[in-house]
Amino acid sequence: MSETVADYRKYLDPRTLARIGALDLRARLIVEGLMTGMHRSPYQGISVEFAQHRPYVSGDDIRHVDWKVFGRSDKVYLKQYQEETNLHLLLIVDASESMGFGTVQSREDGGSKIEDRALSSILHSRSSPTTWTKYDHATAIAASLAYMAIQQQDSVGLAIFDQTLSRYFKPSNSPGQWKVVVNELQQVPRWNKTNTGRILDQLAEKLTHRSLIVLISDFFDDAASIQKGLRHLRHKKHELMVFQILDPAEIEFPFEDVTLFKGLEERGELLTEPRALREGYLEQLRMFTDELKRICRGMNIDFQRFSSGDSLEVPLSQFLATRAASIK
Image 1 (cartoon, rainbow, N blue to C red):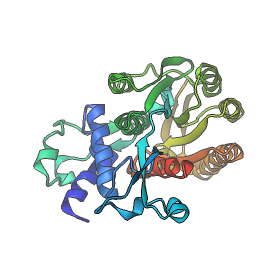
Image 2: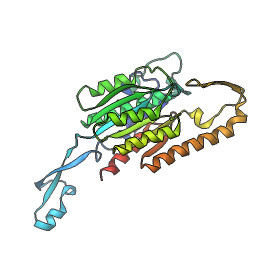
Image 3: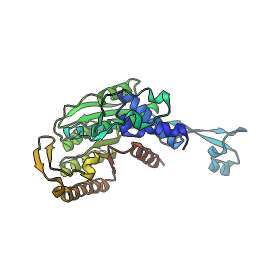
Image 4: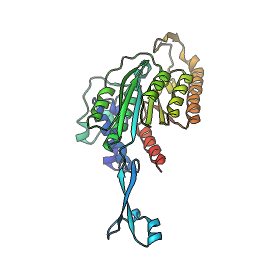
């Protein structure tokens, strides 16, 4: 891997991103890092449609020749494409209290070893490590997807929810939409309880155009209610992608000593010996995730679970691959 690629891809790492204050800057660096690593345009093959033919002239790329036309007429024409502007992307982000949990710590200056001075100079100096929460991970993904879509002049909307739909902006491709999305995503949530199913029902009634919906949450909620809300959206012919975000500690349950667990979203507290609970906890988590997968699979919804301690390359690459496959 070249040094330039290696430098940019550092910004797909949550431990580095935790030290970058502005969400719009995070999103730009994430997308640039992803696409530099992929060695291709972020938009190639994602949202293009046939526009017209034009005669071949010497020097044109023969990969764009329409051979079917040539077979019928013995004339060489090229296919020309234009970007679609009618994709409606709706980003739905969970801002309930459980999404505020985080154990991932930012990298120290010496630990990141960033050689590119121009890039490293944008990092804010901090006296202590910054915690990267599940909500930080969710907003970084959402902002990056919005940046990709807006660069392509597609319409982007945003819904942020807890137990109510606290903020909603319908999809738009207006010049100011990027700023709206970023500003709302970086507002500090109220950290209330959640009600995912009811919110999905509300959004299903609000949306007036068929949309690509990306739902980002930990999904610590009633599975039957979530299923009902997803079914409502699918009934309205929307395409969905579901990203479940969990903290590494939630996935691995690494606790050893007697620990006081504080239940989020009004769940109370529990002082216990975690080693005695680990096996049962991991089994319950596995069953819960399997149920979410089953629900999504039954409705042809793309589902992926991610750790907030892992690179953001996977969810964004997954998004690009799914979009490319859906338009073939």
